[in-house]
Amino acid sequence: MEISLNLLVNAVVSGLLLGGFYAAVTVGVTISFGMLDIVNIAHPAFIMAGSFVAYALNSAWGLDPILVGVGAAPVFFVIGLLVYQIYFYAFERRGEESMQGLAFFFGLLFVGEVSLTLVFGVDYRFVEAPYIGPSLHFGFVELPLRMLIPCAVALIMVAVLQLYLGRSFIGRAILAVSQDRLALQLMAANPARVKCIAFGLSIATAAVAGALLIIIQPVEPSIGRDYIGRIFAICVLGGMTSFPGMVAGAMLIGVAESITATFYGPSWAPAVAFGFLLLTLAIRPAGLLGR
Image (cartoon, rainbow, N blue to C red; front, side, top):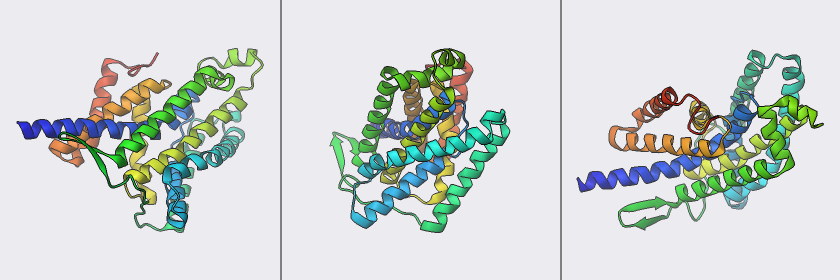
C-alpha cells in the first residue's frame, strides 16, 4: 500500500510538471485556433524547429537552451508574420480558409519536417545543461529539474501573455477580434493586422516550447506529430480562448497520462487522456473555463 501511495503521489507530481510543459506547446494553438479561428496544424513543426535551433546553438557554443528559445522568439515572430501574410492573401481574404487553408498548414507541417530531416537527419538529438540530470527530493517525492524548470518557464510565459493580452491595446484588440470583429472595425482597428500580430505571437511561443521539449527529451524531426492531437485537445478542453482553462486542461491531461503510464503502461496513456477529454466535454461542452 505504501509503495502504491508513493507511486501515485510521484505520478501526480510528474503529471503536473508534464502538464506545465503541455501548456507551453498549447498556448500558441490557443491563440491561433481558439482566438483567431486558424487551424494551424503545422504548429508542432515550428516547435520542432525551436528544438533544433536550441540543439544547434547548444552543441556549437554551449548556450543554454532556454535562453536560446527566448532569444529565437523574435525571429519566430517575424516568421509567423510572413506565414500569416501568405495565408491571408492566398486563402482568408478570398474566404477559402476552411479546406484550402487547412491543406496549406498540412503542407507546411510536412515541408518543415522534411527540411529538418535533410539538415539534421533522423537521429535523436539532445542538449546539455546543468539542470538536466539532477533532481530535488522532498521525502519520497522526486522533482527532476529537467521537468521542473520547463514547467516553471512555461507557466511564466503563459502568465506574461495573459498580462499582455489583458492590459495592452494590441492584446485587447486580439481578444476583441476573436469575440466581435465588427466592433473592432468600428474602433478603427484593422482586424487583418491584429490577426497578423497575434499569429506571429503564437509562432513565437513555439521557439520557447521547442527549447523546453529538447530539455525534457531527445528529439528527432518527426516526433512533432505526436503532439498534434494532444495540443488541440487541450485547447478545446480549456475552453478555446482561456489561458487559465488551457493550463488547467494541460495539467489534467498530464496527470491522467502520468498515472496511466505508471500503473498500466505508457501505451494506454494517450487513450485514457483523450477519453478523459471526451468525458469532460460531454459534461461541459464549452470546456473547463469556456464561455
